[in-house]
Image 1 (cartoon, helix red, strand yellow):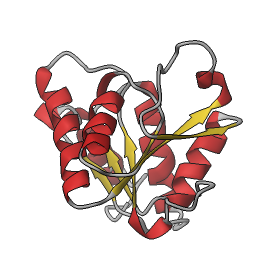
Image 2 (image 1 turned 135 degrees about the vertical axis):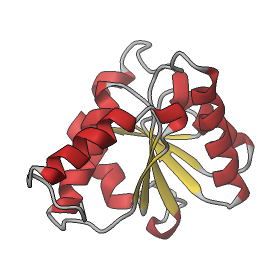
Image 3 (image 1 turned 180 degrees about the vertical axis):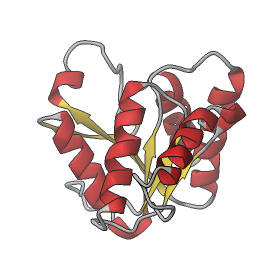
Length: 168
């Protein structure tokens, strides 16, 4: 995926995390801890390329722990100071769709920390592809302080109403 060939499909985790640190300190602590765990296990990190909020926490912890870190940054976000400095290596892509496709095609696992609309879009995008059997990659929500409880309740309701299957 990367020009120098260091990021190989067999060892990548895709991380979705907010550009805000959130209201509670536990969100940032969880992001830092995730980065440390990835580094300890020698797992590469691929992320949205920003140095803000939870993206900053996980990417710095992974990078400082010795993991290879790649930020995949769409042109629109590379302009100005929207995402600040990318931690680790940077791969610039044309669009947000290209970012999602690049990360999807080169990740083995998707890990999601709390976040806003962009995170919700990514959760549903990758989950709908799983439902359509486009992929069988694990998707993990780190439900820090019950952040995703209401979303999970909604999804359970969608299963009860037969709009989703329980295996999705």
